[in-house]
Image (cartoon, rainbow, N blue to C red):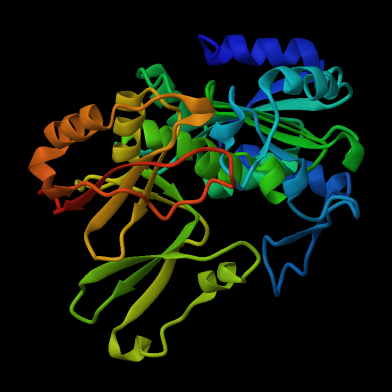
Length: 372
């Protein structure tokens, strides 16, 4: 990762060759200027200001109307680290195939540097990203979706070293020159050839789900494809519910929920309709995965919920014939998490599938209770 935001922006600028570089501050004045710019060049169409004040229509390019999963890659050092449901490209191949598409890609355009914070400014769980883009439409939307500008730079200046650099360029919008690439080891994101939603707003799917999954695994929290609903009783008690829904199922419509019992004091609202970061004081699957990987010197550990409530079924997966010391793993994980587990029951085989890529070696069944 670059040692500073300024150095990284300078590196990107030398490759993309923009006419101007603008550091975004997220202010109302800046947003008004961008809106006026997009209205004047036809990027945005102003709607009826009496019926829909301050509302605009943006039309995507006909060749750029959806996320492109087949052009989305995890560029981890090892293919198995991309997971069974993602496309993999080696970092070297990405540098050879994708990076050249950024050469002079911003010539004749303005490069916008968008520092952003995801989460409340005073939250210890908030994370920082910096997106460089040549799309004012992306800037305007990142301002809506995140806390943008000085609040993010203050975090970086305060010592936040895990900021995520994301490079986006519209390119020529050709599907033949469109890629979305994620580099888990360096926590870097590249996107070129698309101005659509999740392809271009790099704080969403790219960071909050894909890169954050790696960060969560290492740091002991979860980044999940889940929406969060808030419910409040007439007495003022608030409950949050996380629900796992797949893509394209219509869950965004839940953002328009209205309680039929609102007149009785019941309230409902959508905190987030797509991705949830889950932190807690319980031992998580991510922590167990990390421990098993360290103890067994393998790159993947499968941890799944057992049929019984409050139980994890854990196994390491030795890739490429590597050996695993089962006794050492059992003893070490019991010692490390002993305060959190009621029993450790060895099992012979786990109901896990890895699409024939690896053997399965069972470690133990872990029955846990919350650590308060």
